[in-house]
Amino acid sequence: MFRDAALVAGKDLRIEARSRVATNQVLPFALLVLILFAFALDADRGQLASVAAGMFWVTVLFSGLLAVQRSFAVEAGDDARDALRLSGLDGAGVFLGKAGAVAAQLLALEVVLAAGVIVLYDVDLTGVAFFALVCTLATVGIAASGTVYGAVAAGLRVRETLLPLLVLPVLAPVLLGAARASEAVLGTTSTTMADAWPWVRLLAVFSTIYVAFGIVAFGPLLEES
Amino acid sequence: MTTTGSRVLGWSAAVSLALTAWMALVASPADAVQGDAVRLLYLHVPTAWLAMYLSFGVTTLASVLYLWKRTRSQFWDLVAGASAEIGVVFLGLTLVIGSIWGRPIWGVWWTWDARLTSTAVLFVLYLGYLAIRRVPAEPHVRGRRAAIVALAAFVDVPVVHMAVDWWRTLHQEASVLDERRLGDPQITGVMLFTLLLAVLAFTLLYFWLLVHRYRLARVEEEAEARRLEEALVERRAEGVEAVPEVSTT
Image (cartoon, rainbow over all chains, first blue to last red; front, side, top):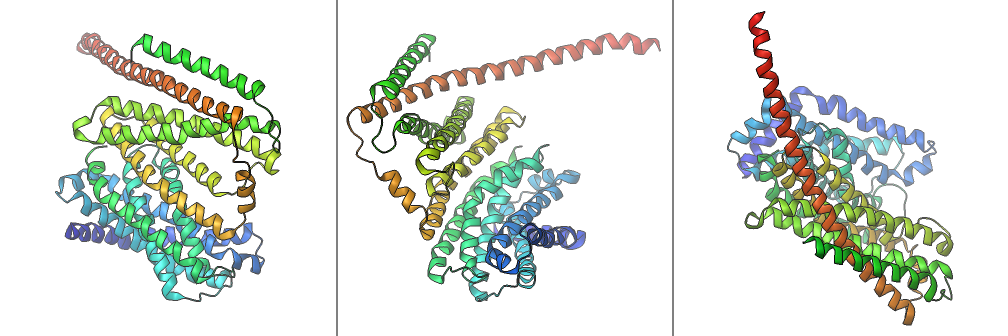
């Protein structure tokens, strides 16, 4: 299962490295969203700093949607999906691979985005290790549930509009948890570390649930549709 | 269910709903604190019960039964869809009625309290489920896809609930509203009876709607299959007619 996962993740990341869609389109989009928020909220610096954590995670969520869509768009061409089905790879392995590749891209994006927030919104990052933990847990959750729904919506004519409707409500707890936990180390809110830890646990629970769900459900999803 | 059975169900739902309306509007007194606004609760509570517990419970159960190989049949797929549709309609009603009630009692249409927020998320979750059901596909593909989405939504419900609960309790803002809402739990006598009657009436209504929505879904499936067959026959006939034309040119 893990060998299959590594193969699929390697393939997806290689495609991204060569096509540069993630770096040339998704990443600029994410930075653009940061700038748009500054316009929308009237770049009063104090105000931006107090909402920095929330803006950061909303941006990650939107970029995550693009990453998931992209992850299944590469399977749509040249009947790659059928090839994947015929390859004999374990369904759970394919899931872990695709979700892993999405997570890796999102984590890279979050590093850039965090730098962007720090520079543009004038906030301090006070706990790098804690923030990295929050990012990892939230990203695993986003990638896992995104990949499940990406597979559901893949190949449908309405996929671009359907995917956000399916994924975003499911990710509501991730946005809540990640934003609240990040507030403890990013921005100017009064959230303390003691407040933040329950949210980290929530993120861990969410990620575990959806990774497990994906491992079980992805095989059947890939098989038919 | 037989036609007689559903007719009996329908009539008992109608009678109990009429009785509920009379109890709620005429026989029960206005609340000491809330005044006449309390009458909205005789609608709000049963619609919430119908949507969140009955409908989505049945959808989840039917989805599991559909995915389980030994009980897989189109019946469960259609029941899951029918039940979710009823659930979404009544959850929408719950939110609207709650909002109308909240305006005079809380002074606002909406408040970010835990229960409201998680209900809103639940509403959107199941809207997504209905959207995926409407995507045309082979019945078995659609069934499996929908069942997986239903279960993915179901496992999300407790997490959403927990998240939203913490979110609000950490901020301590909703507690006043919560206390005010829970400030009148001493519901007794006629009011309690009305509420229980309303819950019973809406439960009957749910099953009546479910039976009919299921039948409609079944007929829709059959009509679809028949249309497809007719279209096939037509195309074949076109082909036969077209052959001489091709040969003469």
